[in-house]
Length: 266
Image (cartoon, rainbow, N blue to C red; front, side, top):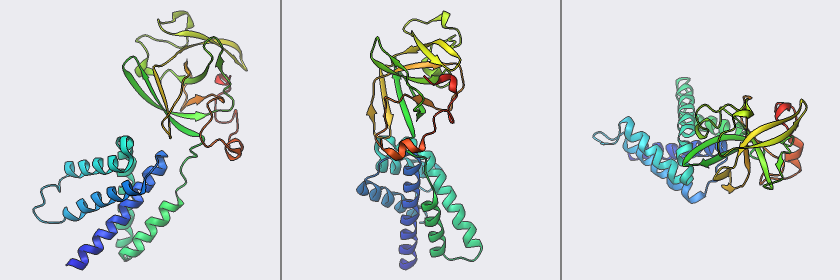
């Protein structure tokens, strides 16, 4: 029985390690070896004790709580955002193991297949993709962002670069009845920014948020947020806000005008 318990514990350590690595790569979160080891120990210990009859923390709510604690231990303040990919990767790896076990493969073969799948995953390029944390008037918003070489917007009176966001992305921060398509209804606290596009010159409503943080790296930046009525999958970061991984491969991978609508390129 002791041998089986030890094997199960080390299998869970391996599986949880793969889950944390997958979640960290998906969100581009930095991971420290010590914190990662402690998180794997905590989650694996819970998985082992959940098999003991009479263990009071074997229900679903307790499992979710241990998942949250493990994520916070591994990723710090970003652990809450990592819970969803962490749980999803656990379900995927667990389902793969169950499928392979049903085909007659042993635990070692299942772990090797899960490891191969984790290594084969190619996360999005962190130099291209980012997450923008916005704080304005007591409200917070978190939206995906892309580094766009075609966005050269710069507001000279305030000497600030301009990030282009869709109205739908910034809805939690905008006043009621706001319409980015009608600059004539400029709300209080917003200003008009002239923009040159392939369709000509136009005015976009913009505002300066109280706080802007760019992930990964928790880099605090200062910029204006211009609101466009067009639907954008991500906020468009200007060329002046370079990613930390600013190198020649980053420039080679970007194809201006292909991924973004030309009407919002400065």
